[in-house]
Amino acid sequence: MLLTITTTHTPATDLGYLLHKNPERVHQVSLSAGKAVVFFPETTKNRCTAALLVELDPIGLIRGKNAGQGSPYPLDQYVNDRPYAASSFLSVAISRVFSSALHGRSRERADLVDQKLPFEVTISSLPCRGGEGFLKGLFEPLGYSVSASRLALDEKVPGWGNSPYFNVRLTGSKKLRDLLVHLNVLIPVLDNGKHYWVGDDEVEKLLQRGEGWLSDHPLVNEITNRYLKNRRNLARRALEQIIPEENPDLEEDETEKDNHEDSLEKSISLNEVRLNTVRNVLRDSGAETVVDLGCGEGKLLKLLMGVKSFKRILGMDVSLRSLDHAEKRLRIIDMPSKQHDRIELIHGSLTYRDKRIEGVDAAAVVEVIEHLDPNRLAAFERILFGFSKPETVVVTTPNREYNQKFENLPPGKYRHRDHRFEWTRQEFSDWAMGTANEYGYRVTISPVGPLDDAFGAPTQMGVFERCS
Ligand code: SAH
Image (cartoon, rainbow, N blue to C red; front, top):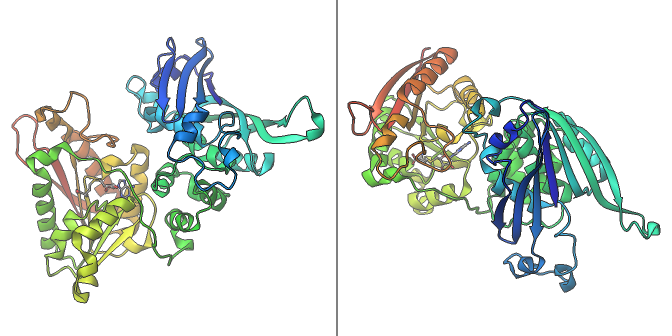
């Protein structure tokens, strides 16, 4: 499996900084069933190419937990195209090897992350089930020029005809992050074979990676179905989030998993202080309906249930596993119907417009915005402050200046692996004021947690009140 990414941006060697890989070296990463190697066959000022080579270990694959389960054809496990075809394995390798770039992070070239650069991508032996038309249908609406040459099944036996594999070349001016996301999602869609991943967090992955492009893609249904291996329940649930208006009343009927990261803040029980503070603000706002956006495992929801004046309490999260935990923590199933009727957990993303959260009196967004890609913040603002328009919105986020007080946190690191940014007090205040002005709110900012003279408090909170 070979993928190459070339840029002619000058200096082209910036590609190394953007991919977090030194072009002078060969980088090797172990995968569960093989290895990925990144090297730079071409590194001039005008043209630089990064190559990702994935070598699967066919025997390792068979021994792996996902191997050929239930296959009626035992030989399938030994004789198949997996070691050669650009498939979901390549996709997994992209997310493992280029993880920082995929999340739009570059320490040395932060200014280039949001710039469109000229790219040329080649993918060898890409199985295009659905043919060249489907390949073009996937990439052209995203602004790529596509050329593809189909490979013969066996060059020496022309009578056997064509294979489903193509050597593919894509060109376009793109942000590197977008390019990697498109490849990551669409390569397995083209393959449509057995996907490598068997984790149950595909819906979340697709929602996160599809942000900003998937909902407008003409093949959104096809992409979603194929990405989710044609598992209808998953696909329906994803589509419900991607295009909520078109699929209003679908029910949740599966349990999913997601990775939850523990926060180092727990040691000082800052979380409790924060949640109690937010509960009090919401209680004093006079709200009767309230939504906790990014409710996680439902700790705030539990506190909110104790406030009698809340008649309707919604908890929304993109992670189904968190929602599962929340359901258990709150023991919703055992609640008397009067309590049961007050609360609802919904699966959704803050960055997709969602009718279910329109018209609520108040919203809490506690330690969530820093999990959003900076380029999705504007969408979040529009959806919450522009469409949903609660009278009161409480937003909390870490104060980066305070990080120096955490002994276990190396300098320059964020508090969570998944944080996309952490703001200083000035940065938060700029964002909060700007957003309040744009959408007709007043905002008051206050510190939460122990106050340090020099660095402020660990958490910063903005309370937004709608002006009219
Ligand atoms: N508010 C909770 C959890 C904070 S952790 C608390 O303070 O304890 C951040 C949560 O945001 C996680 O549960 C994560 O799944 C959720 N999240 C991240 N991105 C999201 C998005 N785009 N839409 C909705 N929830 C999101």
